[in-house]
Image (cartoon, rainbow, N blue to C red; front, side, top):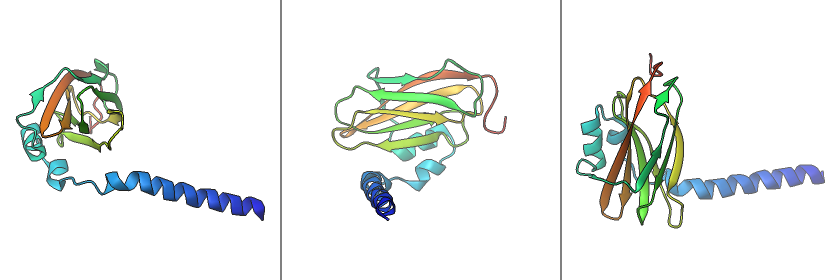
Length: 149
């Protein structure tokens, strides 16, 4: 019985700890309209990023050529002090916003994701820091589409 009690206790602790870590991000404010926006302009406007300043302090690591658009690895790091959130957009997807990460205080501003790309496109990283919004982009050529292609 000791082994079962240990496993139950460990599982309960793990779930409680995981909920404490995930809860702030799960409860973070996000706009349904932002994720459902069609087209890059509408999405950037819904995010409040239509006047985002281009910054080379945002580093995007993505393949120049993605052989399969259904799984394109993207890494975004921000050297901008006070980074609060990082969003990844794919300009030519029907819904450009693929992910938004809200970062807590003291968190290293770096995220990794795998996105779906229907065709060759710019991958745009949008970073919110304080009251300012910044962006940077890289071009990714897709040889085999992942969004129905």
